[in-house]
Amino acid sequence: MPKVTQSPGAVLKAMMEEYQLNPFKLSKDINLSPSGVRQVVIGKTKISVPVALRLAKYFNTTAHYWLDLQKDYELAEAAKDQELSGVISAIEKAKKPAAASKSAGKAQGEKKAAAKQDAPEEKRKKSGDASGAKPAARAARSKREA
Image 1 (cartoon, rainbow, N blue to C red):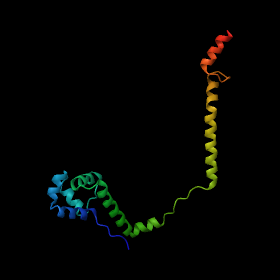
Image 2 (tube, one colour):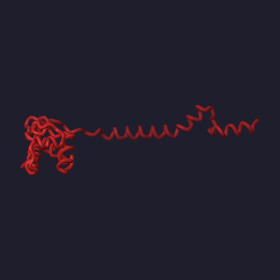
Image 3 (cartoon, one colour):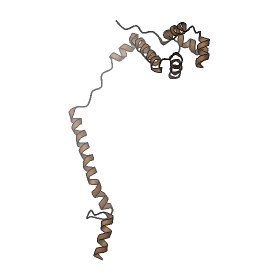
Image 4 (spheres, rainbow, N blue to C red):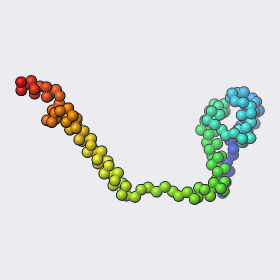
């Protein structure tokens, strides 16, 4: 049997009753419009991150608490949706590529490694020194030869 999940608005309403708050008092205290509070309480508006942060501070909870309430409620409601269930059941799972692709990826990795090893030689060719000597060593060698 599916878990019964309370709406975030029902939880907020219960907390307001526990703290003896009306929507006007709560809205004033958390700097949110009274209609915004009422809309959450009756389930017309979802708990957003800014509202979750305000409620968390006010009721000494966490924003995750309020956002998890919202998420769990939405997932429970989605599980009841027959049309959505039909769409989801028709979706096929993604399949990883066959092993041939793995060997192709390995070969590509080997090419990159070889390119890194060739990099110093390419730099020497570009600098005009086929011997592989560093510029300072070339200059010292030139002075000795002169």
